[in-house]
Each structure stands twice: as structure tokens, then as C-alpha cells.
Image 1 (cartoon, rainbow, N blue to C red):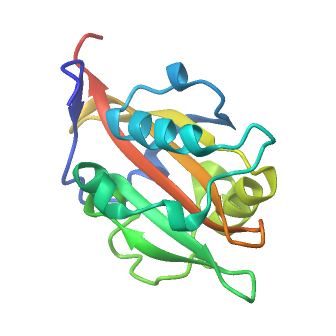
Image 2: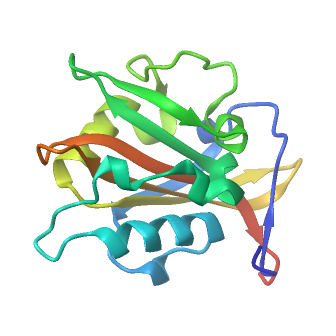
Length: 177
């Protein structure tokens, strides 16, 4: 782990509803990221992104290649009915997004801070066919000021349609700030 980043685990409440000033944008440069898991995921995705703007295929992703990062990661699959359902959810990811939300599909999930259902956001990632990232600040007396960072990247099927979204999220503080 980067010496300038320290993880925060074991929150016990929904972190995302405590997030302040989230900024969601298209991810084009690896230098926009700070968390090591997000850096590695985006570097992998970018290395397979076609020059013609074609995202990597789903079959190119193997969780075994990301074992050290898997706790912060998720993989969501688009169902035939258009719903998004998780196939992978790491423990730190569940801590951030609410461990009580054990349902596999995200059609009922909504976080106040994002002002839209999770499924709407994933549809936007899919239709854009590029990675997006969200940053924000979490301020809590228990932990102090922390940074939030997430990355969401589309993966395609053999027909060229976005069928999955791979992502990672982390709450951390920069030890040098």
C-alpha cells in the first residue's frame, strides 16, 4: 500500500450517505486517482481499451488477478430485463455501500448524496462506454476528514454490448495531508 494512504475499515453505518460534495466525472488520466486499488484497476482497464473506443471484454477480467484488491471491488452484470445485479462484492465495498443491503440486484438502492438510483448511474457508465470516477470527502468525529474515491469501468460481451461494470471504492485518508 502507498505510504501516503491509510485505509479506514469497520464503519458500522452507511458511509455514502455521509459523503460531502461528491464529484462524478469521466476518468481519462491515471493521475486523477489516488487509491492504489483504483490505480491498478484503471491501469488494467486502460491497457485493454481499444484505440477505437471499445472497452475490454468481460472475459478478460479475472478476479484472481486482483486478489489483493478484491476487498474493495465489485462486478455488476446487466440482466436480460435491464437490471444490474452484483456478481462480486468485496468486504470493504460492502462496508462502504451498506452491509445490510444484501440483495444482489441494485434496482432498489439509492444514496441521498448521489441524487439518483444506483441503477441509473450504472446505466450511464454503460452508455458512455468509458470509466467514471467519483471523489468526495467524508467528515465524521469518529474518523476525522477522509477521502472517498471510486472507479467504475464498463466491460463488453462478445456482441460488443456493455454487459458488466467492474469497479472499486475506498475510503482513506492521506497521511501527508
